[in-house]
Amino acid sequence: MTYDVIGKNVKGVIDRPIGSRHPRHPDMIYPINYGYIEGVIAGDGAEQDVYVFGTDKPISTFEGRVIAVYHRINDVEDKWIVSLDGIDYPDAEILNAIHFQEQYFKGELIR
Image 1 (spheres, one colour):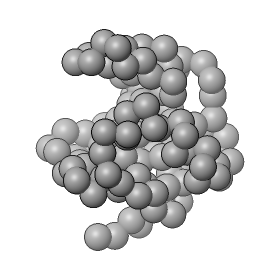
Image 2: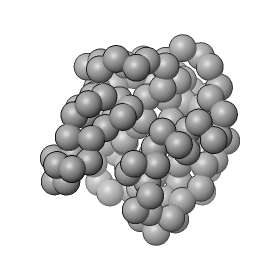
Image 3: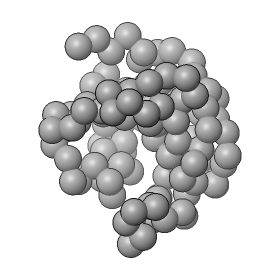
């Protein structure tokens, strides 16, 4: 498995902004902007999902750099970690921010 997307600039759409509820699990509220890359198909057959770092405000679109990939070991898709502001966020900060959803999966952060 290659992770040559790390370091690449990407843009996409936020469909679950900060403060929104998960469509199937309404008790799950997004503490981070979550969206997808249009036209890039992930392992689940849908567009590639991303967690977007670099703002604490809800946004509708994004453009930034992929700084890591969260590889779900027990699922068919990975999640890309995107930085809007160019900061290479530390592993602990990334894992803490995505824990609300990734706690239900076994995974590892790839750099």
